Length: 242
Image (cartoon, rainbow, N blue to C red; front, side):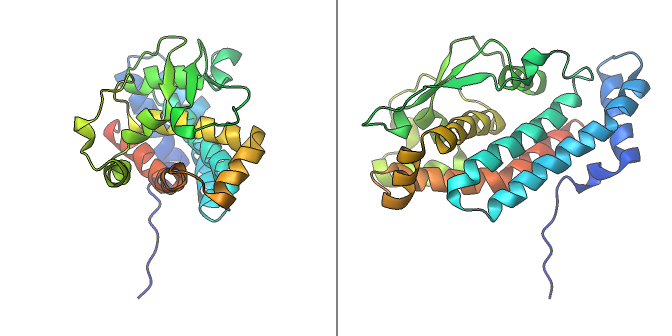
């Protein structure tokens, strides 16, 4: 018996379907000229979905060393398509095209990924999709710690339980609030993709020597987000489908 992998976003690859979906979303939001904006954005919406899925599918069959880069850009394009369902004017300026996060320029000799942070910037995709899709407003300069974000991913709970021996709820209260998984994925993948591109020595030592406890968490996270991101995007679109 043949088993086919379901593509959760395939329904939106039809031009008439995508156009009617966008038009309905814009009308619900009270946007004037909803039909015209849906027509203008239809092709770009489909192309962003297709390119995002292509990057993620390629990541599934690529070495771990380059998975963060492919996964980050795959997620970014899927988020851009999702933002278009609520913001027909995207991108209204070049400011929203930035990543919206910054990472430390140089990793220290005794660098630990769990303790690393990314900082929220004033403009960029991170700020824009968080607000447009999830009504979450980030303060400029807010620092997001990697370990805190990893703990919020349900599939990683068993890893932390295994290492710490205590339920997560009994652990010390963390400083970052609970976020949507897509917000968490974006922040983690942004930092990992920057490391994979610019901190090659530490990255390859982690992959080849696997020192400390961080490797299994990073490896498992990459597997989770690569496979789960299209499902989360499809769920978001389906929830907002009229």
